Length: 424
Ligand SMILES: *[C@@H]1O[C@H](CO)[C@@H](O)[C@H](O)[C@H]1NC(C)=O
Ligand SMILES: *[C@@H]1O[C@H](CO)[C@@H](O)[C@H](O)[C@H]1NC(C)=O
Ligand SMILES: *[C@@H]1O[C@H](CO)[C@@H](O)[C@H](O)[C@H]1NC(C)=O
Ligand SMILES: *[C@@H]1O[C@H](CO)[C@@H](O)[C@H](O)[C@H]1NC(C)=O
Image (tube, rainbow, N blue to C red; front, side, top):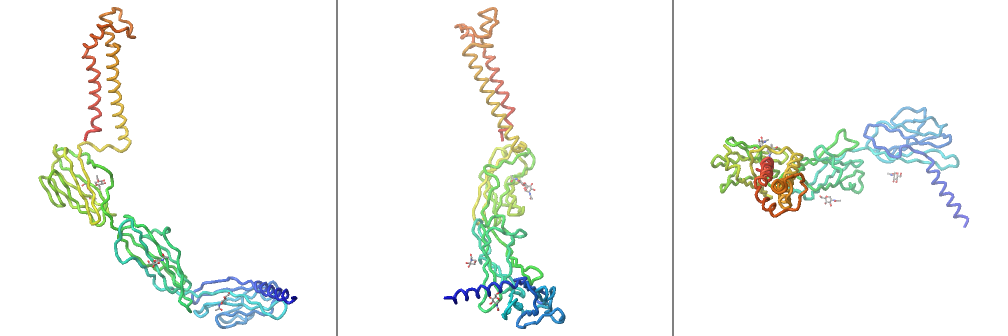
């Protein structure tokens, strides 16, 4: 069994010696006509250096400088066997091997690197579902195939200018048997949104053999039913009695929406009018937003008091709006809205306190009620801390309806001040 360790030792030596030829680079991609420097090194003095490029074996020496494959390096003394390979040819695609003498023995050592002579792929193909339009919120998948590149091309995806990073699948690289050309394909999936409508889906292919990128593109069409931009009843502020008024509602829809207004029992389609009220054609504002307007030639009191109903529809659905108009200015934002609410709350509290105080005062004969009874019953009248009520007081307290009324009218005068916030 002594043969086994010996064999094993030999194997180890071969593996180790194989690794001892340090070749750089291990792999390179070059275009036809480019040049490449390959360097093999061993830690001892060498007396020969060979390099196999394509099917030809070149003997390299520092003093031979002609040809497309010439010696490069710091000389045999430094253990360097390098080649400067010029005018790279298509058929050199494949392995480049350097062959160096061993430090001892007769078996030559070799180092292998891989030269990929780049070949441009064919045009990218973008495969998408045949149906040209998609519904919002559907999962959309596209596939891009860039065939026959060497090496495989690189694919990146864009939606207009913006790169798609989420939803890209792992690229798959395949090649025909017996061919060194590679086809790459990658899928991308995306849940389509209204904002994607009209955008260009782009598959971009980059390759070493191309001076510029190649692209395949397809425009996305996303359909969705009308959407409202604000919930609830819409109030159009700032209309003036006797002047023309415009009611507008902005909606988003694709395909373009059809709008129909209902005023009282009259229905108005775009371009129709009745008694000075005209429905206008929806105006596209861009991005699927439409301005839908109703024109009142002269705003009258009864116009302010009624409701306007708008139905916006397209092939995918419809949306109903109730619109009110107001002759007041639009409340300027949330802060003032909160202020109005606080004002109302305070007003109501003041009113409640006032009522409570009146009732309390009446019930216990305090303050003005008590004072009145003091004046009649107890001449000094100093103390407002109520003395025990007498029968007279209770009777008397029913009389000063004037004071009572003052409290309530106080409450009432507060109300009209706050009314503008609540009235329509
Ligand atoms: C190139 O070298 C690799 C090892 O580095 C080897 O597997 C492959 O078969 C070689 N190709 C050719 C065409 O010799
Ligand atoms: C990529 O998309 C194609 C066609 O759209 C489909 O046939 C294929 O199964 C998809 N591959 C992956 C990995 O999703
Ligand atoms: C949208 O409608 C309003 C009111 O009808 C109008 O003032 C505005 O100019 C419209 N905007 C566009 C871009 O048409
Ligand atoms: C009316 O149209 C203008 C301009 O297009 C828009 O800014 C505004 O929000 C619209 N008003 C309503 C209530 O939709």
